[in-house]
Amino acid sequence: MKVGLLGCGTVGSGVVRLLTHNAEQLEARIGARVEIHRVLVRNPNRPRPEECRRSWITTDPEAVLGDPEIDLIVEVMGGEQPTKGYLERAMTAGKGVVSANKLLLAKYGPALLEMAARHSVDLAFEAAVGGGIPVIRTLREALTGDSVVSVHGILNGTCNYILTRMRNEGASFGAVLADAQKLGYAEANPSMDVDGHDAAQKLVVLSMLAFGAAVDVDSVPVEGIREVDDVDFRFASRFDFNIKHLAIGRLKGDALELRVHPTMVPTSSVLANINDVLNGVYLQGRALGPCLLVGKGAGELPTAVSVVSDLVDVARDRLAQVSGLATRSIHPRPRRIVPMDELETRYYLRFDVADDPGVLGHIASALGAQGVSVEQMVQDGRAVTRDAAVPILIISHRCREGAVRAAAQAVGKAPFLKRPPRYMRIEEI
Ligand code: NAP
Ligand code: HSE
Image (tube, rainbow, N blue to C red; front, side, top):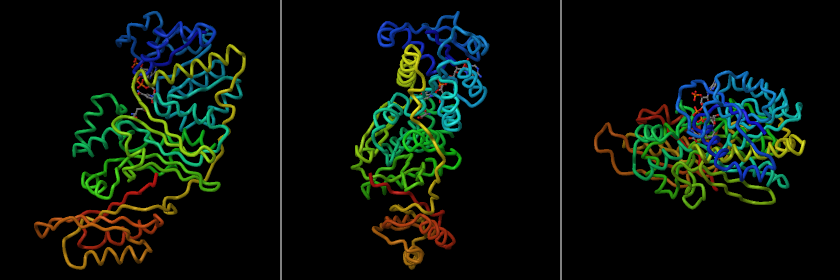
């Protein structure tokens, strides 16, 4: 079997290494030898791993996509265009495709699956979500006998790394982000990570498999971690919570709750204890109950493991002259996404206020007027000067987000408020 590799950066280098070093083992597992035939890159002079032969390198897409000898295309280039066109071209030509591209799968997943089916080829994409964690395979194969009712994911390693260090060391967001970039965790544009878009794309891909949902990624409510403050960590631990950036999907009748945001989770929760750059996906099956997958969500070799395992599946199908095994059970259809104002959960609210008489009463009245009931309240210390702020922290009982938002807006107009009110959702898992 001849492979055309599109891209040889972080993940592509890992793929070249695994295919080279595990060649015999892979041949035994597939029943045929898999060989790299061509490697498409942008800059032919950039250093490549020593396992990557110079004769493979090309900058001409036609040398890969138009070569009839190539059976399988592995796309680890990233980006939307020209990548999408290359994948379409490969499938139209009857080549099996493996892709690590979450952006493409999130934006065009249903259309690409439909195209693979039409051309009787495989399209596999394990590495698109959770790097080396076999979550796509778990949803696609292991859980086909059950119905998934919810998915809670720590899907962005950069956010998890930053929040972990902010909590453990009291480090500032900016300093830890710079470290995450140096360590190669963050995307070229770190806004994709810290503003939550990377996690939202991964959630859309998971929802396609878990709930059979075709979701427009732009319709997913997304919040990043820029607004999370060390004060929030201090109070989170006082209330026995940790703060995690979660991507949450949950069946709500025929609709779907889908959201990505910083979340307070009880310190006893398994997700509260998945730290540093690790990813974790906590699935709830109707019959199975909970199922937790944890591992490296990024990096050269962990991600390459997922890509090469997909390649094994696609190569085996091809050898057996069957196709679509990877994706034929997925029939995504549009679903209504529950608006955030309809969400019902407990909330953590923070009001930074002047330390004056009547302030607490004003806040309590605004919450009461919206039917938001207080479960716990803390005011920490006294303001040292007239202009200094004191934080008032409130944990609400379960209530509608629309009510919390309206109460926060009402308090937001008060003269005693030193900063806009903040609230964070609490997730009982
Ligand atoms: P990367 O290091 O930037 O590598 C991209 C490769 O694609 C480079 O070799 C680049 O060529 C080549 N390339 C890009 N645009 C091209 C074009 N228009 N024509 C020809 N070659 C082109 O990216 P990466 O981190 O390996 O990520 C690749 C994909 O895997 C992305 O979809 C990413 O989201 C996904 N992914 C990555 C990770 C991770 O840990 N990095 C984890 C999971 C999924 P040059 O080398 O010549 O520049
Ligand atoms: N930038 C991503 C992360 C890489 O931090 O998780 C894996 O998609």
